[in-house]
Length: 108
Image (cartoon, rainbow, N blue to C red; front, side):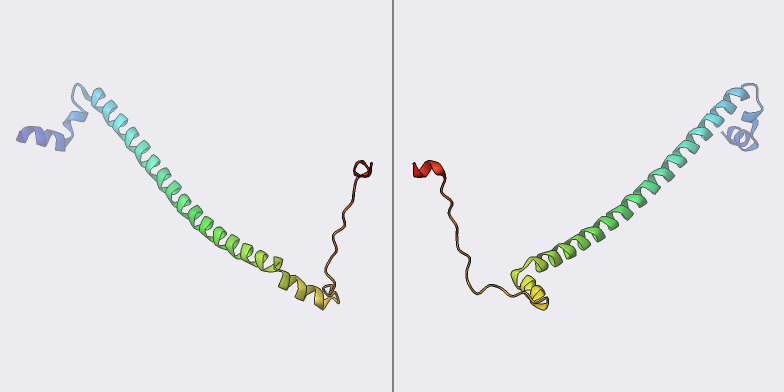
């Protein structure tokens, strides 16, 4: 046991007779570790981008609600009346009359 640990610490497994297999495994393991680290960084970037987009969606939704409430205020009759009064237009005192048009078929 003690000799095996010392051989590993000294790196004898890298220069022994079956060293090419060990080197291939080390290179393969290093390649996999590099791929894992790269994909982890990519996933972290995506998580941060999603968080930023969620914040932007919240801000835009809030802005939408504000604009919609302003538009509803502008559509009110009282708001329209006060706006046109400033331009010299006044509401009619006489209510509108309904006009009925009879077709020619009803007269015959």
